[in-house]
Length: 581
Image (cartoon, rainbow, N blue to C red; front, side, top):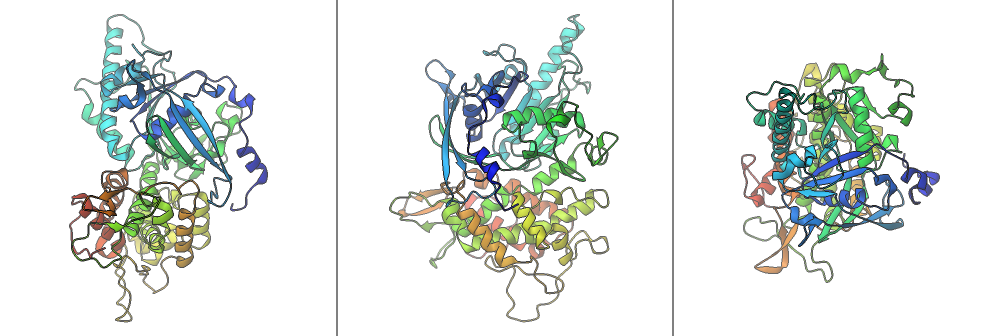
């Protein structure tokens, strides 16, 4: 998988053939929720009139910051320009390989505030040519999921009530019962997206709701991607830079049925421009990942090899994809990478006295702020922390969740480990599957769901695993917890710091007011607000539910949370003992 297919590279570096760009498609209305850079990127790409594939695709935006997407004083939808960097290879996007840039320019068809969510979803009174929505897509930080899902739920209940009232008044059936389902999903299903959806619809449910959606005329389908598909940044109005796209996307779908997956594959594949790349959008299942060939979507393909009677096994074992969504939550790589790199970058290496405020000296002549990956991930400690937290601490927890929740013999939560395909392949090749690492600390032994206490240290000079700089070796038989650890630490730092898609991303930092030669962490960014409470803290909570001693079994995760929450002015976990950075 590391070798580059030259024919595929030639295709990637060329424009899409005209016949694919102009192929007629079913009309589709997509509503984007949130005013993020991801929303801006999609507006530019999907609203680009020069791309024939966008014909018949109406894109609406619902956001609190509607002024970002309209042009004053007319308040017409504004045109966004997206400059996209195309690496030579998505599997190995190193900075020393050539890249090129293409430009997309497009605008949404209409823009609404959250008070216009009903109109955006129903299409009633919308100032565009679209019909009622086919896809409601959250392109927002994880911390905003619950709030936005509550607004969506309230709007859907209101639309359904009006439809039922029309039927009761003799207005006939609102819409046919076999229309495609209404897809509700997120570009990044971290932090328990399916949990947030259930909470939102439960909180907004009217007292008289019958439990069916006859008035809406659509069935509901939930979906979520494990990895955010775009690495994008906007530093000036109406311009966004897209540094790269995630090479392979895994999606969870509920209810888990063949019909709903095919609707997701068609509609979401169109949004992400991977309709003609079947393997780029894979579905998570209890028994493995799979994808649909084009023939499978139109009924001409043969039944998948791992299905029985036309049904995938996962449809019977996990009908609402609870385990698959849990896999998205526990394998959200950004929520591990970001805090670890922050802890390595904002480290007191000067021996300064006083409280740890995270500030570091930065007086670079041309760069106003450190680059998050080029400078932060380049620190050797970043690689050590990432592998220590992800493989050393998360993997035993991931496998314990499989033992506790999945049918015996299946590992759906562990299925999505390892980030990108190359990383997953290498980890497995070295014997570092979550199952392997869990066994080294006793998880699974005689049905045990948490690590066994380690044996006493053989030497008084043994490294303290709670030390952020330690190699974190703590097993029952004194063998390495992660095979090839030094190699993986080096590869992690090298790969992230030299990735052409990541090299220009600035660190979440601000200049110190009292000393302009120093910078400090900017805690009001998603690197903190998303990744700490909805990532590391959530994992610690699940670990405690399974009987982990988090101070002993997840010391790196706990230590990082304590440092970062101190800068944030929060207390997600008890402060405990936290050495200065």
